[in-house]
Image (cartoon, rainbow, N blue to C red; front, side):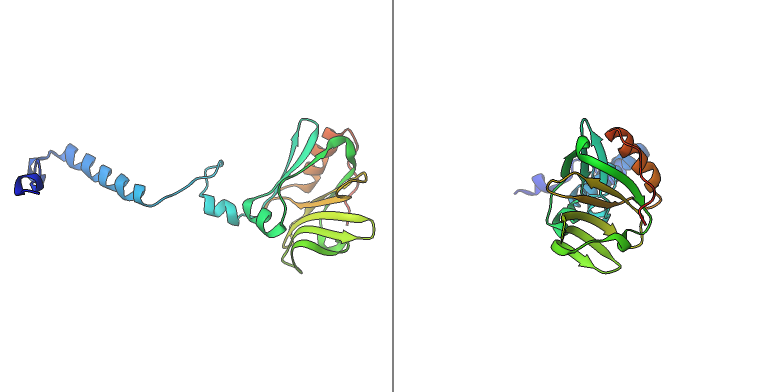
Length: 180
């Protein structure tokens, strides 16, 4: 390179105050562009979404979908679960879901009092559980199939009674009394 190619086109003294602000913003944007920041759908950083352990219960057409976070999929050794609403026998809020756990862990993680993520096997079949600390859950009992029960925590500040009522209404059944 020749010295002429290295010389700036203009100096800072040549810039007006408005131009200096624009240059500063461009430099800030360039620095921010160097740091990759992916955002999830809800506008929080993707890293926070991975660590935020909250499955969602979604009614989609004639199905109940348990949409798991990436962390829950990894630690629970399972993907999202889809069950027909017509196969749901009962739905109940469960304020103390730890007391109603059945069987032993088959696939996933189970740390007593902290988290249960994954499949549990018992004498009547299999349950799928996503439990975190002392959060209340929704218990969904189903007709014989892959799972006989789903026990899924509600988000912090969520209302398990409202969730159970919403799912029961979509399935065309009356919500059951609290499970525990």
